[in-house]
Length: 346
Image (cartoon, rainbow, N blue to C red; front, top):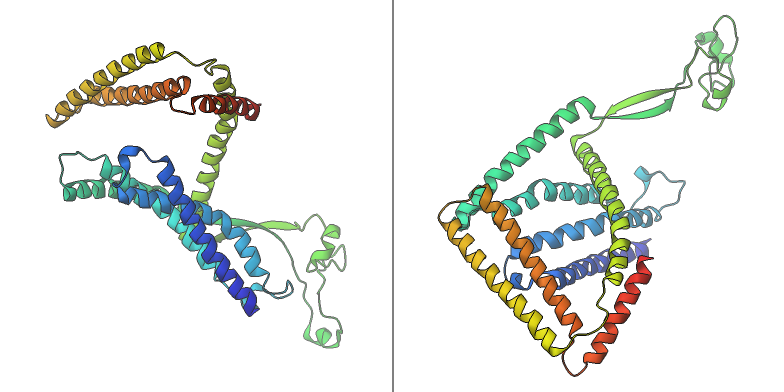
């Protein structure tokens, strides 16, 4: 058993380090180039959030392996388990709930605060909005817990008859005292194995309600909400991803372009970039003046859409005009990539 203890501990350490390493790589690979060497706190939140997601999935096989340290005949309370799995389940799921309700909202409010604020001012503003969020969530969870914080279990309803002490003294098998109803004699409703022969006036099962603890209720609510969101977004993704892959193949570039065409398109992209830069400067001045109404926010959103479209057009232009010594090889990989995209979409 000692070998298995050390084996589980080593597995936990290795898997935890691997999960952190993978999440750091994902963050570095997909972050925007302008976000390098800055915004460390939200990056830590992203790494921690992704790690919690992975760990919550990996806890199930870990729990099974931890329980396998004892024989099935031994109850869990009498088993000397390697890991305190109940505490680990609580830690992971409550940390997940704290990230969703506290840490992530604070991060969003902090970086959405007015840029004219000082660091302490932005922290104070974020704390105020986060406190309001916690109060609203606390009221919702508190009211829901007060009215519906119960777990219902369907249990077998047993009963027992009466027997005098004198009769009980001579009974050799006092496992079950039958119920005498005056019509049917000897109904053993204290024996669950005979529930099929019980009379109709005695229901075989009933619901047993138990008040759960508030942490367990929070874990249950977060799990239900998470599963609902997963079903919605996963369902949309299962439809949208193959469609995007197939459309990417049909709207793929059919051939490369000449250098003159490349320069012409590049010039148009440069003009659009200058226009976007001018709009951004004007919006920045407007922001400093304090004019941040609905029109300002709409123009900021439109500007972000234009910037994303500009980046996509630049990528598409470089795709149809591969440059360098291995231009033909790059184009061949592009064609093969679209063919694989179509195959995966089907």
